[in-house]
Length: 219
Length: 219
Image 1 (cartoon, chains in turn brown, yellow):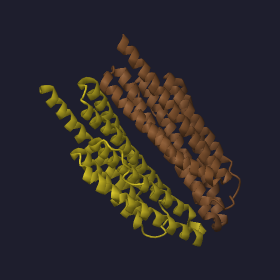
Image 2 (cartoon, chains in turn yellow, orange; image 1 turned 30 degrees about the horizontal axis):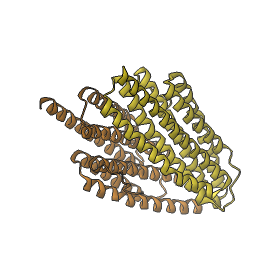
Image 3 (tube, chains in turn red, purple; image 1 turned 90 degrees about the horizontal axis):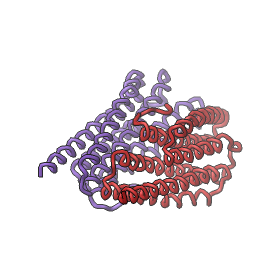
Image 4 (tube, rainbow over the protein chains, first blue to last red; image 1 turned 45 degrees about the horizontal axis):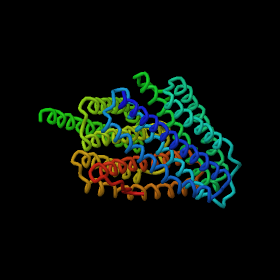
């Protein structure tokens, strides 16, 4: 029984580490989009510099997972829990990179006045952040219900992205001078849409972990 | 010794499976960009329909990896080999998705005459395909040298992407009527640039597997 308890503790610690990494990622998304909306170059820079912390967490968690597998020879279900963790941190790391891509867009646009105040893009960021948070809660609690409802928000993010896309195309056609800025915002929107996809991946991963079923939560 | 031999066979089979999955992904990239250059809707459709095969391969390989870990309790180095395999198929699956994103762009543009014959985008696709092929060869042979030289091509893909980007911006400013098409091509170029990044990820994974060092091959 003792070994099992040690293992359970290690698994709790793993979940805790993943939650913390998720917190950093949520912060990065939020700050990246804030920096864009407020044209705040130093905030964008802080997102770029903070990415190393996210990368380091991924590596540490991965190392812990491997050590856990190698030394504890976990049962099938526990092994799947660890594997899910490994996959989740890959998605989180990628979200961190996408936040950096948005921060780079801020730096590119700084000094230009924005075509119009950003409304939909920050809204997408809020939704994406909420999805990340709920996806990780669902992982910790192994909550299929939450994993599924969380992923439903992906549709909202997608439709906001389509709306932003159409709107920016119209702007560009009306005023070719803003094409450079508009394409940059187009990419920012697309990056957020991708972040939401990664959160959905996490949801699917949890459904698979708990039910053994591979199911597309949103396509 | 017998168990060890069985395990080695299983590991060879795993590598073989990953190579096959990689072949499908290379094909998808090549056909997606071909469909775009030739405005061939049915070819684009075949890429979209073929994605399920790539997804299925990922799932089968993942299941095999998990079974291998659970039943064979591999040594540390072998465990890392399997873990590398798990990470590589995640990158491959994502490349398949990006090929689909390009195929969707073909479908969106079909019937419009292209602004100009595509030259740089197919060139990027060839480079990306070569990178995927070499990355997987490097994995099978655990060849750090090849993993490193392969990743150097990422710079070429990046600089082609930047060139395409600048060129398309100029086109759009000169002729707002083609903005819709030009943004679509911009995204296609970006997707290829991301595919090359995923190939670079695989290279980094191999360097880590063989040397234990985490090194950014291209940034």
